Length: 503
Figure 1 (cartoon, rainbow, N blue to C red):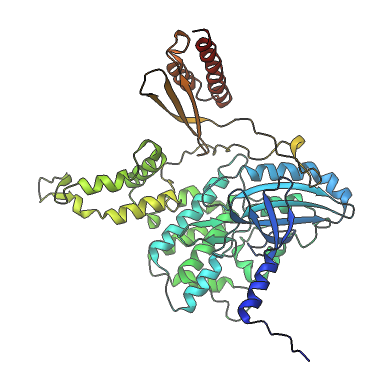
Figure 2: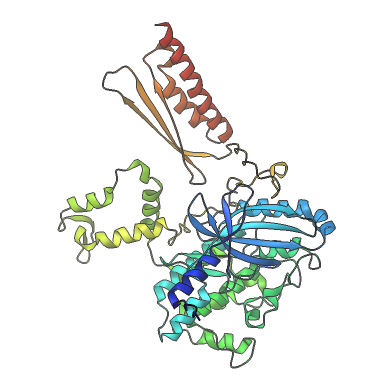
């Protein structure tokens, strides 16, 4: 009689891992592949399941979310509203907001569903991080607290300044995520939109499930749900988040819900009077007296990096493509450590000299890397006008594909504004032709490069200057600029080839 071999623990884990990575379904375009493994990215109203998926183009993991409709008639009646809502969500673009990648509608015999793909936050929620910190008997670092508050407020300020404004409505420590490099991202941005669009009866799961959880009731403003929402409900929720980040946990004293008294006691326990005043201003009972996210970004307690230093860093990062590689490192190496880079003179007392030795190259590199990753947003120079809506990444309603039509996605029309343009001309060794390269910096930070060869013919002498001039005088009209550049280069190629063939 043979005894079956027992699998070792490692073999069992490998087999379990293989089961979880099994591909269950593909998106219509084939880019996203749904896996078996379930994930939690903060409760979203009506979302029946959230699974891990793979983005085959970028090679990163994403979240595959599904909203199921049991009543197809209700789905049909809400279809245009659903498309409009998801099209708006596709336009939300901010380094401190969980990215919304794509969506599509799927009609089946028994039910209908909406599938949407979001960024996967693998490092976990802020709530989990605070619990681990408290468990290890550590206190919150004040600098980290300031950076987190700044990033959350930067995201809220962006949402509130959109036209029309986007109210989050579900900001808790469970819907805020932290990455390994300290970057904060807020998720569940679509919460209020979902609640307003999806009727409770037609969607599986409770649309207001997160609101109904007793342990999170204290995150919601007193006026929540009583009337039309505005930015003040998000500010109240942020105030509770900021307080929990500072004290690590607001004690509930055995009760399922955190009491008002516990919130007051947590606020009073803050030693820094500025931190205390900052959180209390967000938690005012009268919604009209609460500050805006933009106002809070200028609060003294959040001051960490001088505005001029922050502006200089952002300018350097935004124009990095114009600079040689490792230019900062090479430049700092060439400086004399004892050389004076700036001096402040006083008539009544000794002056102050700032030397290059006062600046650590490693600290400077780290700071620039943090700025690049979005940890220090440029909030002090934000305009008061409504935030420009970035280029729509979604397809038009006529082009939205269902699962039954796995055809390639159509190419999008260029609608972005050209913010900056860099032109480069290089001649070959023989001098028979010149290579023109145009680098276009777009307003959504996704850049474009156009290039062609210029031959020494009368018809193409002024092509470069013509392109540059036209791009700048039509800067506001992105369609004209992009179209003209590509048409002009195309026409030039034809002229150059015709000219070459007749010589």
